[in-house]
Image 1 (cartoon, rainbow, N blue to C red):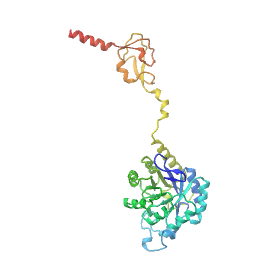
Image 2: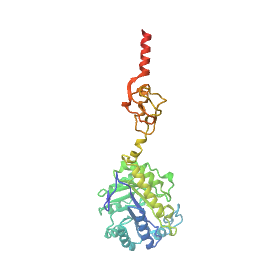
Image 3: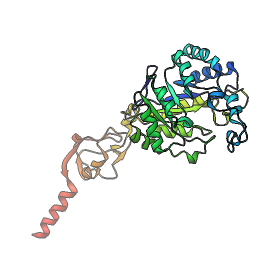
Image 4: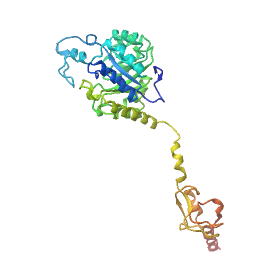
Length: 357
């Protein structure tokens, strides 16, 4: 999979997405600052959510249009989305800002009108949120534009995930493991699902994280996540609907660094840093002055550091042989210093022969 010239998949450091969502608090200048913060933190991409309250729900007071539980309990859907949406009239300026900061910007889409707008802005990819994963007509329409797609799977069954993948059959795609709890308890994340999704989907798999810290992205990287998505918020901004499970810019930057270092630590490499230590492994040394003809014994040779002598495994083989030259204390043992004859072994063999006679 490839977005704006950046490959996403196996053997590549995870693609890190900074999600703005409603953390702009309804202020365009905050949205621009969030793009700047994401770029400074080292994210590969920044993502907005492209909808209006009228395209995502109805202005209606019926009970089913009021959130019944969770962090937004008691709020009408229409009021919630009116407060958190990113106005269409901001989009062109946000894309221009991202271009200036050399960071990819793309969007979650929620209806055909948002896709049509984003097409005019040359949006390089589309995201399908977990709540829309069952909207097959929406996925099909987004796929018809030929852009790469990322699909979140919170709440989705295996059958629903398969239907979404099939609806986007004609485009490159990635799947994100996600738990649609806000915020999500760490013990509910079931990250082992990443491995199962890789086998099931046959495409890049990542994680969309709604916990309050950075452990989930790090652990997901260990398990092979190709994408990490996390919400970002401003230091000085007012509390928003998404801020409880978002990271401040310095926290986001710390997560980016941790994810990339973790990925590096998982790679198969030849550890060049070991070379400086290699000479200081153990080897056999004279630990007392040894005269020519003197027998080697546990008292005058030992396995010590550094490693310039014979290997320690030869210790029992060398004991009771005679030195063929003077060996000063602190000399690494070499074969040319030591005779072939094992005096003790040969003496014991002679005693055995005498008893037999």
